[in-house]
Length: 436
Picture 1: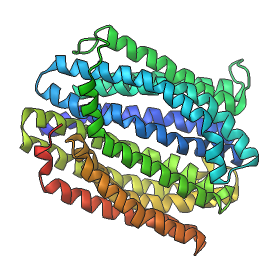
Picture 2 (picture 1 turned 30 degrees about the vertical axis):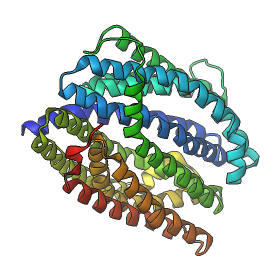
Picture 3 (picture 1 turned 180 degrees about the horizontal axis):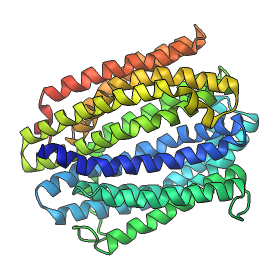
């Protein structure tokens, strides 16, 4: 009972936090949908490419978390402080590099994906302004990781509330001209996101430098600390990058079926994010707790926490799947008035609702293994299952069979295989002896 209380205290604010951040994406999508299917497709493409950036943030979140949670478990707050400061300095420095790279890549990526016409116009309009968001995203990731490492998940939740409210107001204001603001269309929606994250970034820095955490605020850089965080995170970074590349390949294939299919698929993924968030939150709590318990050398407690989280996640996903299946039509009509797109959304939601049940187990044990620092094993498992059980079958389904239904089916197969392999790896207990 005590373990459940600890899990809920840590996980519930993360659930709210992620749901609030999802609200930002939903609001963006809802406002952009007012400009048509091409605009929706453009935002989906930008967010797909943006996945490359979020892959790189793993260095600051996952790599930092493994070190921080262990130091917190050992009560070594001085060492933890050096981890935070080193990651902040690297985050600020690399944000400049990221902006430069992403400034020249969009047209090349869009050409590769076969995007043109109005979709390309919207994609560039939305994407270029989001470049300003990069330093804010990295700062937020580092400080949020520091807060979560010692069990403070409430502060990130409160900051997410501020971001969500601000983004909703600005989306309707700058995107649609509400509240006496200038109507800036798709550009305004992107600018709203930048402003929202900029405000939250300033608040994160205030929390760090105003000593609102148990760590010592400093801007000292330690190369060896960053190297350790990078070494731990590198396999997961590689996994995320390959996932993003495979998603772009997958997206290119879906686009070949027509804008309606891609718009429907993109909207479905945003809708299903509602179901993902609680699962990811509890799994993330497991990753934090397992790191702390390894620091304490209390391995039995670590196992107990993960077992409880696996049961919780499976129950949540079963209930979520039932909800999505019952209310598919209602959810689809919120984001599109196009009958063909609605039909595709309804079909997609049913498939994803079923496939997300094994995803609950997959996420639980993936986060647990990564939290323990066993990132190389999770990387290998993800790469094998991603390409053998999802990407290659999906490409065959689209280009050979011309069947969107078979594309959706491969998600169930891949999640099921990955869930089994991650569970089996956790049961081997190799994570207990990982050095970072």
